[in-house]
Amino acid sequence: WPRTSNRVGGSVTIGGADVRDLVREHGSPLYVVDEEDFRSRCRDYREAFAGGEVHYAGKAFLCREVARWIMQEGLGLDVCSAGELAVALSVGFPPERITLHGNNKSLAELEKAVETGVGHIVADSFEEIARLGFLADKHGRRPQVMIRVTVGVEAHTHEFIATAHDDQKFGFSLSSGAAAEAARRILALPQLELVGLHSHIGSQITDTAGFEVAARRLATLLVQIKEEHGVVLPELDLGGGYGIPYVEGDTALDVKEIADGLRGIVANVARSAGLPVPKLTVEPGRAIAGLAGVTLYEVGTIKDVEGLRTYVSIDGGMSDNIRTALYGAEYTARLASRESASGPMLSRLVGKHCESGDMVVRDLWLPQDLATGDLIAVAGTGAYCRSLANNYNYLPKPAVVAVKDGVSRVIVRRETEDDLLRGQL
Ligand code: LLP
Image (cartoon, rainbow, N blue to C red; front, side, top):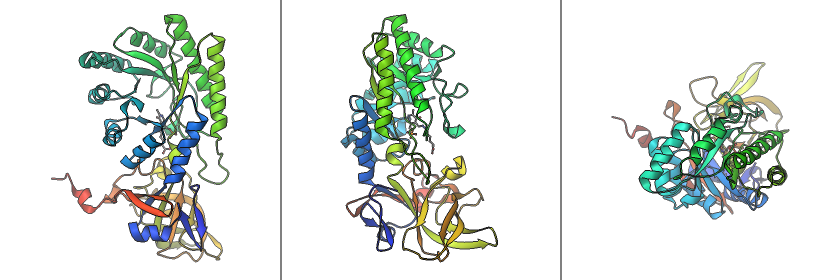
């Protein structure tokens, strides 16, 4: 739950706003973002990684207002498409604080980045290095480039969100020598400035060992590049992936501990090779946005399947939160519009889409007197819910409201039927 969430007089408040008022004013389903929670996590990361940089990973959840918060809190931004870049630039986000990622950036995306002076472009393939060389010449610019290194770490998380084992699409493999070859090719192009190495091992990782192995391997490659080329790269970007607790019993990572650990490892490797300690950048997405967000739904039909469980249907589902269907994600949810003294019933919180995989919480306990019209709050939906939202079954995407000091305001408006029909012949 967000840091400012509370239960007052029977109903839940977020950022000082009562969930019943939020739904009355803005409708349901509703994504609610606790602005103070979001901003305070930005500050936690910035302080823990002081001396380095924190780039928020926009894929977790980005809109124009969030880009402003990130800018105001002094963070940089990680984007991986022209669309994400456009959101950032539209609010005047300084391009030099933006990093562009992607395993298949289009020529147009690369050109936009070179033209606008995006701070770092993370090269992900040999074709891309050649394209960057061409674009740098064309625009008379010298972009700062990093190499995405696949460090060979098997992250313990869902297969779809692990990214540093060898058999996947991202980056240059360390073990095959491709990463070292990428460094050779970039250094051979004087119109590109190689500034560092990047690694991202996966997402929702709660065991810090993987981050540490990645940091050590990346720092070691830095030393090898110095030995081979005499070039000291000034930066290491360790990516994101810091896991958050979704349900009781999940591990909560301590960002200070992580920062100290990673800094120590990198400093050791660098110093023992007689190199200056490189600047460290991290790219948390979920760890900043995840717990700041709550989704509110209204209960519709309630079906008791004799002897098994009660199916509680809500007015959204896999279109606003696909993570349960896609990754088997787990969430904490509760009756939010009132308190109940009645006993618990084993429930499944399901959506209104036309398939059985459409569920938001597979197993949860809800009070037996749950009724149509009650509001349910699902915690930890600030990351990868709105950003993965879709229009399956032509459901309009819910609004996003920011709450702070008891005041709510729409930061992304609810889609309408007109929005759904727009663009069709
Ligand atoms: N940096 C890079 C290069 C990334 O690819 C990602 C996430 C991040 C940073 C931020 O990772 P985070 O700190 O948020 O874990 N849709 C999935 C997550 C996909 C993450 C993709 N890359 C989910 O809902 O769990």
